[in-house]
Length: 115
Image 1: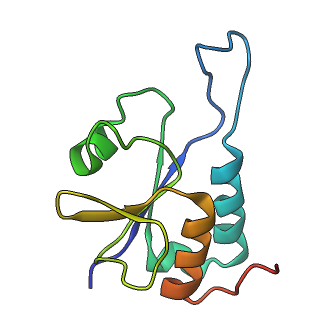
Image 2: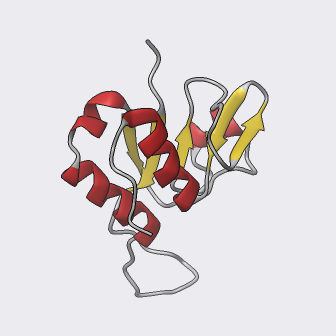
């Protein structure tokens, strides 16, 4: 069975727009926290931690050069029932953090975030 692919930024990283600063992506860290809290996620999805610089070849090859923002969940199917699903060629993906959280709940059985 094909798995969903989750792409996250590997911390820490530098952004040339902010010389001398070291960063992490808080959206990615939120999802990293879910993976730590619910370790079965790491068994149910493929997790890819990639470097900051663009172009991000792993994403460009699947989603095109205009879809390199992270985090992104590349779906193993069309994502029926999920919110925020986008499509590039025949690949369906979600690049909104809240929609990713909802998809992880729907598709992989983790609890729902408290409102």
